[in-house]
Amino acid sequence: MIKKKVSISPLFFDTYLQIIKQSPKTKIFRNFFATVNGKKKDVTKNGELSCAFFVSFILFHFKQIKSGHVTVDSTVKDLLKSGWKKIAKPLPGAVLIWEEKDFGPDGMHKHIGFYLGNNQAVSNSEKRGYPIRHHFTYNRKRKVKMILFKQF
Image (cartoon, rainbow, N blue to C red; front, side):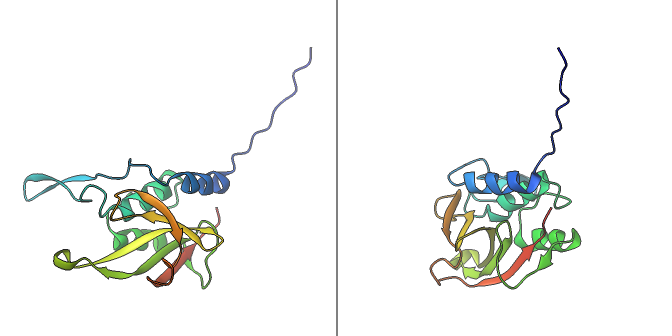
């Protein structure tokens, strides 16, 4: 019996897109703990502020950024240093950065997520505390300020 050699080539970008598509409702990005002024604190507030943790975790897993993050600014800075480029129109797999939103007493917060295609995006819901699929402009209620993309 002759064994035929099998050639396997990972399709990382396709896998990346599939993981993003399957991420809605996962609660694994809900909590990120840090010591703040000597006390343990969930800096993502039980998922309310988990958008950057969600996005950076996936990007870091696929070696597209240098580190995981819990802020939009640090995630965007890492993306730009890692070769991601600004584009005018979203492509599947692109990272979307939306305009800031007023969280009342907690102040203004930026938001980050992924573009899926067909006007759909996945980002963390501050109300639900986990990623959800939604229209990429939140049905024209939140403007996309920046789109970053890198094919890998």
